[in-house]
Length: 163
Image (tube, rainbow, N blue to C red; front, side, top):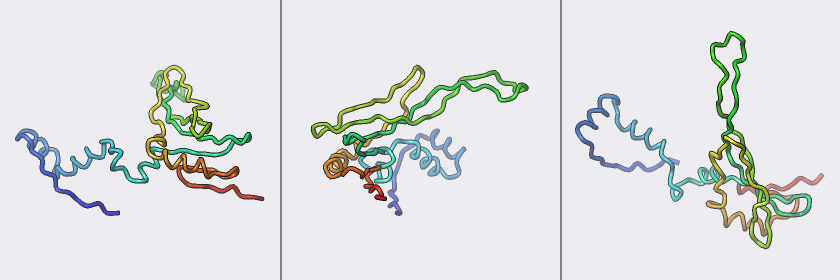
């Protein structure tokens, strides 16, 4: 999909204009790069951006309870040690990212948290699914029509194959 271009006029001081002209042949490139770093407001997000930020899975467990799981991206501290004895660096602390899920169970027409995300010392949540922000109506719609053996992954109904 090609987006419509909109002309935007900005006022800069002579100093700001000189800085832009000095470092950039085309200042509009700088503006484009700066805009890419800004968060997109929810009201203008595309469907793809909403689906990416609002992932979820819904399925029945063995006991017949309807569960909803939401992913969370966690930053976890790790200890990095050099692989070789002649490595000039000392061991140091770094971070890696992991995914963990919180689980909700449908009770009396509402999803109640069953398991949350447990964080250990030094861990932090970087991103949590915004499924309820973007797809609450869809989630409750699927919760009423989903049958055992079916599952929903991010708005897509998946049927279990019968052997």
